[in-house]
Image (cartoon, rainbow, N blue to C red; front, side, top):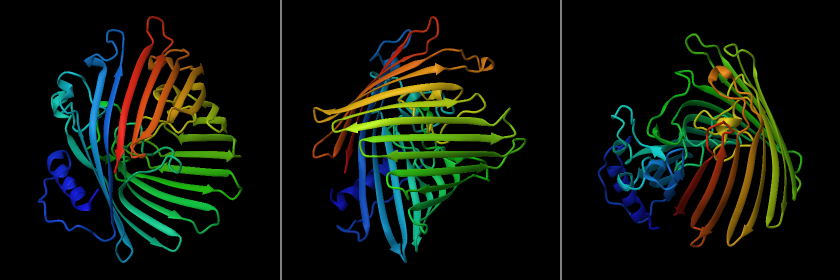
Amino acid sequence: MKKTLLLSVVASTMMMAGGDIAPVVVAPVVEEVSGWDFSGQAVVYYQTRDSADVNLFEQEGAAADAGIQLRAINKDVFAGIGMGFEVNGLSTLNLENAVVDNVMQGVGNIAALGNDIDDVTDGGWVSQAYLTYGFGNTSLKLGRQELPKALSPFAFSEHWNVFANTFDAVLIVNTDISNTTLVGAWVAGANHNGYGAGNNLTDFNSVNDDDGIYMLTAQNKSIDGLTLTGTGYFAAGQGNADDTTILWGDAKYNAGSFNVAGQVGTIMSDDLDDDAVAFGAKIGTNLGMFNASVAYSSTDENAAFKNKGGVKTPLYTQMILNQGVIMHDADYIKAAAGVKALGGKFGIAYGYAINNNDDDTLNRLDNNPYELDVTYKTKVFNDSTTLFAGYVLTDADIDGVDSRNLLRFWGRYNF
């Protein structure tokens, strides 16, 4: 896309999006802007899920969004200082009037606006705005940005929804030690990536009042095929709450067609009855067009192991919808397989809670829920567009509660 056209679209989107983005005056744009890289994506997203009294494709069980994301990055604006910006816009294109009853991501406080879905369907926000600087083997990133799960397993950007959640943070990366990456971060704020109108992506809040959350990660790849990662978080207590510390370790070994992994961690705070502990393991294989894996995870009853900025977990057994089961007090096993065919990749995964002794004081049951995921993903139009289709079957294993079906479709055009 020509830079002139893209910048005009950015300006138009910012004026119409609403939310956190203020109107701007469109100035003449030159054809080329030295050093700036412009890109983005356009997304359409639809999901439907049945329930006891709602069938698939009925308006009451469906949600949809159309979105556009535009970004501009310059790695050296002045004296080695770089900048990056990203804006998002969402709309249902009025589908909420006849086709869907919800949105995948909200752009307003629906409760404060009278619980009217029409008030949170159309809007926009600044998802990234940061400065960068590098010296020697150290780089600094300051501002609103994405954080990767591989280096920040309890505060990471989730990409399962229309757009990813982001964080207001300071990030420092150093590679002075051979084959080792050191990452330090101070996370001050975040929005939240969840399902539905109740999750307002335009709303960024402090994650731990003025103290924020501190993170330190060390990742080493000295041994060929082996990646060792250790992460620690510290959040100072607020009010009557005590300090919280999270320690998490992950080891992955890839021997070509064969791979194994293990993870273990703990959440420590005097506010808990006891320190929370979780661990997991995974073994997999890749044989040309086929791949398969088996994973196991165990979490205890003392705390939930989940992402601060969303709903997912860092566990190997994470599937499309099972985070509510695996993050707390469950032993879970997941088997998955994939095959490349028909120009894309088919995937199937089955997960089962072999032990799910949830705390009765939370009105949860000693049950064995399971989930089945069937997916297909492909790239078209010279790999510029990714298409996804997924089917999910969930069964809570509760007497009188029927299993549920979900269908999810989305397409992303990158430019």
